[in-house]
Amino acid sequence: MDTTMSNKAKNGLGLVSIVIMIWTIIPLLWIVATSLKSDAALADPKQNVLGNFWPKDISWDNYKLIFSGGASDLFVPALWHSIIVCVVATVISVALATFCAYAISRLDFPGKKLILTSSLAVSFFPVIAMVTPLFNLWRQVGLFDTIPGLIIPYLALTLPLSIWTLSAFFQQIPWEMEQAAQVDGATSWQAFVKVVAPLAAPGVFTTAIIAFFTAWNDFVFSSNLTAQNAQTVPAALNFFTGASQFVQPTGAICAAAVIVTIPVVILVLVFQRRIVTGLTSGAVKG
Amino acid sequence: MSADTSAAAVTKDSGVDPDKSTSLAKAGAWARRAPLLPALIFMIVVTQLPFVATIVISFMNWNAYYPKDRSFAGLDNFKTVLTDVNAREAIIVTVLLTVGVVLISLVLGLAIALLLDRKFKGRSVARTLMITPFLIVPVAAALLWKHALYNAQYGLFNGVLKFVFGDSAPQPDWISDHPLIAVMFSLVWQWTPFMMLILLAGLQSRPMDVVEAARIDGASGWQIFTNMTLPHLRQYIELSGLLGAIYIVQNFDAVFTITSGGLGTANLPYYIYQTFYSAHDYGTASAAGVIVVIGTIIIATFALRTVLSLFREESR
Image 1 (cartoon, rainbow over the protein chains, first blue to last red):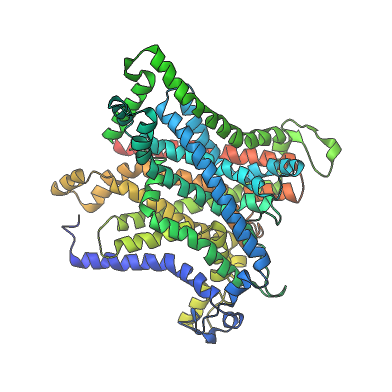
Image 2: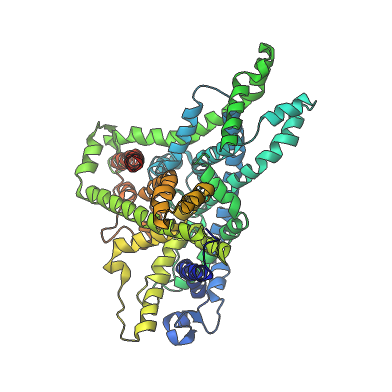
């Protein structure tokens, strides 16, 4: 295809892709720009350049507001809760899913397909319908608005997803190599550590990123099962208020949105190729 | 592709009959692997219990305002949901939102995937940038659209209108004028990269030698696209459409954030939320939840069948 394509056509394609980039990147730049505008600049277009786009004087007020100012009571604890809950949920679900996926890809037992299908079905289950029974149960057993009370439902989100993705990865591992190592005199532990683990590591790693990503993005569980003590950032974002009741907290919201998006963007950009493989291999075999 | 299947076959064989060894070795293999099964059981407990609870509650008469009246209700809750005006509107909104978002983002995603499948300068940069909307925390994305883009006073859209047409430019209030479309476009923006990723993976797994052969035989670009590329993409289109539909049916973040379910944008998940937290009618809320699940399953099977039959007819 490339050989027949003229330089003109290539330039044309480059132009079209610039349009696409504008479509995706301008809203993102806009949120960064808005987070750097002071309240005065937000209201007055004359203090901005590029047609009200970029502020003439960059103001860090919004970031100060969420990290040390009036909104820090809401934002800083929420950020910690997000990090703790998501990391713990990711570690637990990947550990369990590794065992599970190993069993699924290595053993032939009745109901294997059923487990895989049901884990897929569960990950499609509307979270809002899971929240309602949990809300009552959690208040009765004292898990409402606690960190464990959020980790458990997050496991319900991340476990099925991890099992599904990891099983797809594990099915591609040439397991006969494990036996070959054992024939060559390795113990089964050595065979696992030296042969299987290195082959499985990329899959496990990708799964961990996808699981973390899912937990980090959750809004439904966090907004409904917490009040203050375990609230995560996505929920906290929605309850921001401005400097006074009558000021829209737009700048602060944008600053907080930039902060929560950065770790995810970095993670995914660094491991982009792996994640794409993980997302697609989970469902399309081939 | 063949390497995978052979590897899978080997795995299967070794599981059933490891090297035709003695039954002792077989028992040993099971003993080594049996401890792995508790993980399965744990997963089933963690994930299935809320599901079962929802189903049970959906058949019960349970309103927190009337704690003494808790009883078995049969199908009453389902009747309530299907006859309630709000619930019916919520179902219509859910269908409109899902179909609209999936179709638009599939078409856009396909176009962009076709573009990014070609080699040109800056392709990898374009691809990376293209993925970014999908990486943003959904709530943050919804807030971005609500506050930074749609806002009538300082939003980007009205800013651009002013920039292009001068001070007398129209300054519409996007969200209150077109609430459903506003929600839809923020979701299209977020979901197009997802569709694009899967379709691009499909395009890149295409056997290029066959396409090359077709070109030498004089097939036009359009013929190659409709007769070779599209049929090959079939399973990828199905997959991205299905996954997208399943997630958008249960979307809550965008509706909650952008319009708070007002102005005729309350979809089923939002209706469940309202019934549960405002009306405290747990039975009805659970019944609506079960309906969302059934709807999800129907979409999945129905979409799969339609698309499959479509392509079968085409290839005849």
